[in-house]
Length: 319
Image 1: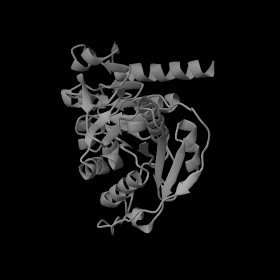
Image 2: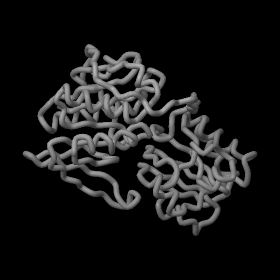
Image 3: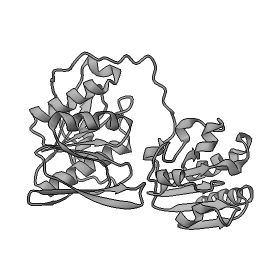
C-alpha cells in the first residue's frame, strides 16, 4: 500500500496535494498496489482526493495536531502507515514535509529520497527513484532496498491527472504524543499562489534600482496571473519580503515559466530556479551569466522591455 500525506492549508487543498496524490497513484500502479490518502485536522472535501487516484481517504483529527508540531505529525503519519500496512510513504517537499521526512525515515529505518521528481521505476524488488543533484545540474537514480520507503515530491514535478471519482472518508485513531511546540501566531501570504506551487513566476533583481520601481514586475505578473519573486540582494535590503526570495538560500522553484528581469544570475540564484521548464532572461548586460542558463534572452533595458511585454500580453488576451 502507498500512503500519501495530503496536507491542507486552512482546511483546503492546494494544487500540491492533488499533484502528490496523482504521484502516489502512479507509484502504486508501478508497484501493483493501491494508493490511500491521509489528511490531518479539519479538512473540506477530503473525499475529492479520490478523483486523483486515491482509493480511500483517512482522516485523523485531534487537538494535538493544532500546534503543527512535527513530532506529533510524524506520529500521526507513522501510526496510520502501521495501521493500514503501507510500506511506501510520500509527503510533499515543502516546509511541513521536510520537517517530518527525516523523522519518518528514522522511525521505520527506511530508505528515503528527498525531492524526487519522477515516477519510480519498479522492476521486481528493485525500486528506483530519480532526483536532481548538484543544484539541479545532474540527476541521480537512487535504488531503495529497504522494507519501508519514504519519499518527498518536488513541487510541479508531474502534471495533475484525474483518474477516478470521489471516495469515502474514514476517521482513524492514532496515539499521539503531547505537543512540545506552542504556536503563538501563524502568518501566511494570502491571495497569491505560493512560489513552490506557482507555474508562472516573474522575478526582479537589483536592476530595478529601488522598490519604487517594482510596479513593472507586478504589472507583468498581474496580466500573466503569475507569482512575483526576487533575488537575495533585493530581499536583503528589504525591497521585497523574504518569502519572495528564490535561490539556493531561499525558495527552490520549478515553474513552467520563469521570467528574470535585472538579475545577473549568480550561481546561488541559479541553484534555486534552474529546474524551471522555460527561463526567460531580460538584462541590459549581454555578458550577464544568466543568459547561459536561459531558454530565451532579451538584451535590453528592463524599464523599456517589461512595459512592452505587459502591453503585448494584454493585447493578446484581449484578442
